[in-house]
Image 1: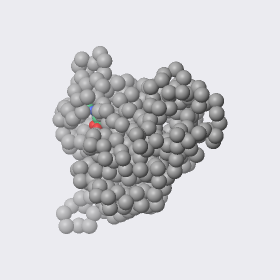
Image 2: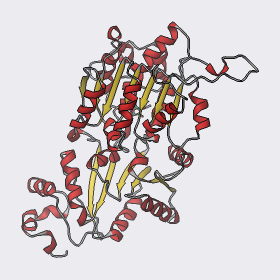
Image 3: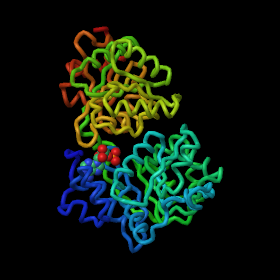
Image 4: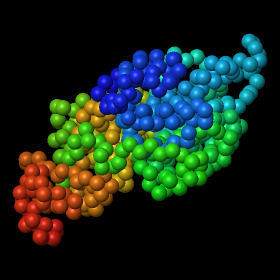
Length: 452
Ligand code: AMP
């Protein structure tokens, strides 16, 4: 239950007013959702519009806003109504009667949710199963790389909803295990990320294979030109639902920046922060898989319940580690960007950017792992002088400076301002020592600043 998630204004009827089927309303109530969130209120009615099979929608929204239910509810509503009208899909597996080997039939889902990463796909499938707890005859399967084929095929049989990463989905289709021409609803979650990860061609192929579909819903952090170009290729006159802009995101996440002189200085700042008693659970982001493994090992040796999570680990191990995080057995997850995308664990109170992300957008996704479901969170970034440009790019993308602070006894020898911080410091003094004399310091080139 997430009572603190912002409720939609002017929706006194709660979810019932949206006209969802009863079994979904009961599930939503079980999950403790009382009012639709703004993105749900904006996206569900047009996506449901039954007279026109539901509109195609492009929705910009951040993780943590309730976007998953915003697309799952209308899609599941359509499937629930279909099953109520003609209970068709269950148990193709036993189509030849007891005692006989089942005749092979490829799976024939009606809804497809595409996600950039395995973790996000598993999270979405988990949410779909939760929402279907009072529905019979609509099954969900996950199709992601790294899982044994046999297990996946078994789960696929008779599934109406398939939540997949694009590559593995196409593998199964090419192997004749899965039909895609039965798909009526396609959802692209985190479409921007899918393009980043090089899935453009896979998406084009899936579009072609599902051309007879009735509806496409696309969720993305931004409507960048490449997202609009993708929409133009695969959607029919989509309606736009724009709720968030980069600069008004994450207002409930406090962001801090610590300049460090060297990798060892960065490590000391991290060690200092990991002793913060306010940490319930934390994610430490590393730049590389090697850094991730080494840091997790170091932290274990220092007595922390820490594990690494990155793309080179087997899917089984990744799942077990994520489960341990969800169950609170792991306190600190040391992760790379891809592995941590989509993690939704409300007790993550802190995110540490120990290694900086390659792309400014990834910073926004990283810090969104804390402050889930309306809670407050803290995002701490450690950067070296050589990272100045990257910090500048992050500030430009999110259109806000990250306040730079210092820790007594761990101050950098050469404090650095990004152009944005320098401008901000001019107007607002009060971000720690740096703002005490911003004009004088900015007049000097960074390299010649006197050590403090
Ligand atoms: P998402 O943006 O889909 O990752 O959702 C973030 C969190 O909000 C998840 O933990 C959901 O279970 C929760 N959530 C989604 N919709 C609602 C709602 N209407 N009321 C309360 N919590 C919600």
